[in-house]
Length: 222
Image (cartoon, rainbow, N blue to C red; front, side, top):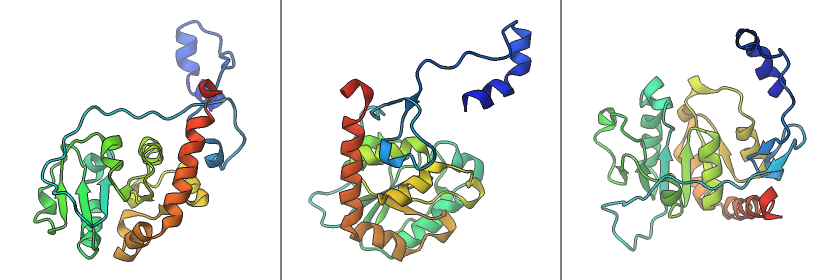
């Protein structure tokens, strides 16, 4: 990655009078825990993922509620680029599942999703790390930050990006191979897929193992 980036900066380096070959980095930081590095070998120090998104008040959810709680979040830019079509399909699947769903979609216009099923509600912007600690599962777009935040919260995950946003991302492969969740695309999400994520304790156990690994393997924790 370092060498590839340097090659792309050739014109800028020349303009600034900098040698065309940047020095090698002294330290490389690995943000994913060791068991999720499915491509290549570790290059440097492992860093513990510590999410922070501010405080959150989630209104309108009665307690206690016996149903599982599932979060749906699709990133900051994806919905602005592609619209809420991907969420429509997930909401349609959610309507057929005995669970409560929370749409954390920021300030994206959710009008095309109305009327929402009785078991689905939208909360706008929330602190994702705080929300996920109360969730049985999360359905999301597959971003690295969301993936790691779900692990930190101990929450199994379904990666379901918009099919137009299927860039190569090794984290999706890592989630599947490590056994901490499922991988699909938004237009392929079926009620049975979400139900299998909610109902399989194996995902909870494996996520707990990776969360502990993430907490104790970081360089500063040694």
